[in-house]
Image (cartoon, rainbow, N blue to C red; front, side, top):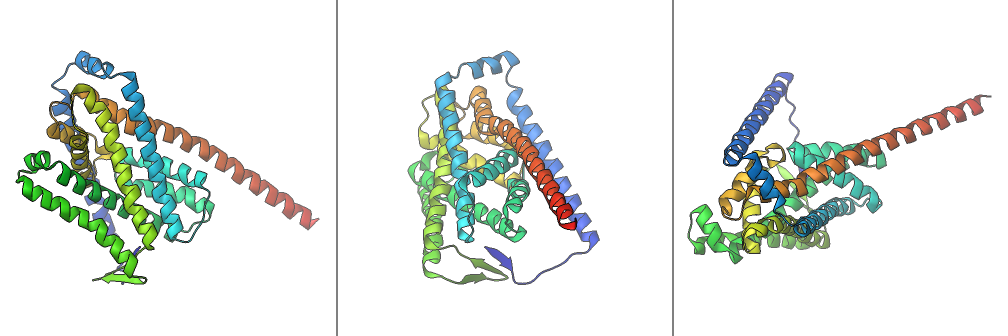
Amino acid sequence: MIEPWGSHFGNGQSMNLKRIIWNGFLVAALCVAGLLLYRIFRQYSLEQIVQSVRSIPFAAFCTALLFAAASYLCLSCFDLLAIRSLGKSLPYRKILLASFISLSLGHNIGFAGLSSGAFRYRYYSRWGLTIEDVAKIILFCGVTVGLGLTTLAGLALVVNPDDAARLLRIDPAGTRLFGLLALAVPGVYAVLAFFIRGRLRLWRWSFQLPRFPIAVAQVGVGTINFVLVSACLHQMLSVFGDVAFFRSVTAYVLANSAILATHVPGGLGVLEATVSYAVPQEASIGALIAFRCTYFFLPLALGAALFIVSEVIFRRQSRGADEEAEERAEAQSV
């Protein structure tokens, strides 16, 4: 967990300036997304797009859907580990509900860390966690994402250096070196967690490292999650060409890195453009649309439905609890 040593409070004018900057950044990101989508889709007619999607076998679509479901289950383990690291306990079904709704909506809204954090707070606060607890959960999950992506990126650079070298315009030996450096990051994190029991201080920040078993689990579930998402993408790409799995991994790692850097809502346009650049022959428009539907749009629809249903249930329970409290108060006053 990270806490600043000192607190700095800005005035209202600085807050307004920050809001203007963020809004401007969001508008710019949306414009970039629109431009990228236009450049991708202008190459195809509507008939070509429909035909490309329809050419994907139903079995391939179902397999990709299973990989997507497994990824969201893996993501719920991020929250589970975070809550365990806080010394708290919640039933897994509640963690799964909060995690899935938060991430299925957050992945599509953009600024996933912040948007999913708002949904997480809505659920976890009802179940007894404080705002500080939720902030630590969000940070823990963000670190797990970084560890998983870094580990898988390192593996991709070591196992498949040629594609990365072509895309990054460096020689394969340099690519492997970057891969080994990336793989060292989770190793260093685990070693620090093993040897440091207190807080790790760096400049103005202090880090409360998790226990060693939890740190190792972070690296494991973080990496497995991105392997599952890459497998979902690979199922779609392999329909249109004989693409090696680690080529799909390389494409997804680059795409996800670009999404994290730009914060475009849902990575719209950024994901499609990056994958098309990484694997131009296999990245048919049908594969890209099918992947987005499988990993983004279908979970979004299910997450929105679960959110509405859960809100109705929570409000009924709250209304019932208020009525019971009023009845008890009236009975005591008689």
